[in-house]
Image (cartoon, rainbow, N blue to C red; front, side, top):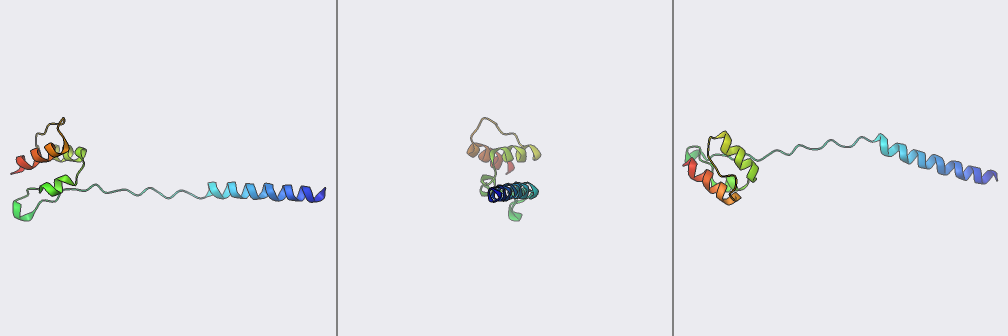
Amino acid sequence: MEISYLIVLIIVVSVGYLAWRDTSEAPAPAKKVAKPTPKADANNNGVVSKAELNKLTKVQLFDYAEKNSLKVKKSGTKAAVVNEIWSQQR
């Protein structure tokens, strides 16, 4: 009978330790992912290439167009938005 109390005590302590260990470890902070920004070619007088524009998401393209006072249709495909931005830069 004393052995069964000892076994139960060991199990309770083990479970308690495992529960405490899981909650005491702080999760690692999430890494911030840098958004790619288009880089203008020095030879093209500040015009960003189509390849650089294609690396951006559609939302980032809209942000880029807004920052550079370019008019683009939000209903168009990403390829259409890239073409509009690229043609307005020239």
